[in-house]
Length: 163
Image (cartoon, rainbow, N blue to C red; front, side):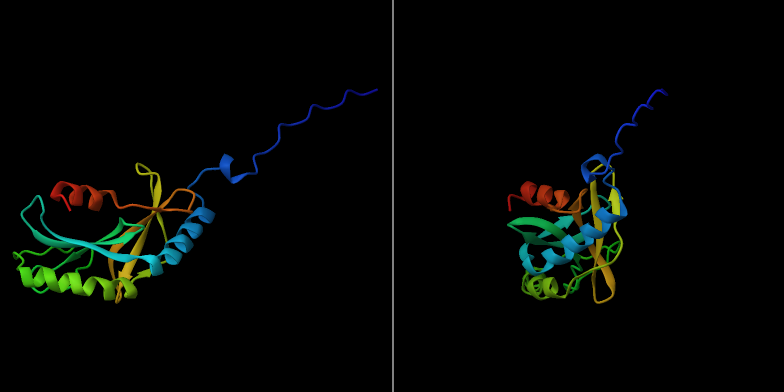
């Protein structure tokens, strides 16, 4: 009688055994980010001087009382700046107050764009956030695409300022 062949080990079929940087998880991350947007609430607004001397007004949008989106505003007029553009002027108390007022309406107008970038050092997905056709921020979602991740940089800056 011929010898029975040895069975092959079972192939992994659960998502826990697969890599997190899959298309399925990227799509899930986009859905998670879109589902979270209605619950986003205005957070703190603060002044910041960047390492090269640029003056910035930043505003946080919070989820469950934690900053998840950080926006940058022009110190000159309080307008929302696209990513990559920094203000050069110093802000006034009036400009900061204007940004605080606008933060709520801006939060309602944000859109999560299709496409996610996997950030290996942070082990999460980063999805671009647009406002009126311009990319203004990003939102981070866990590697499995299921949970919004707090914005570490915003949290650190707010903690340093005691806000």
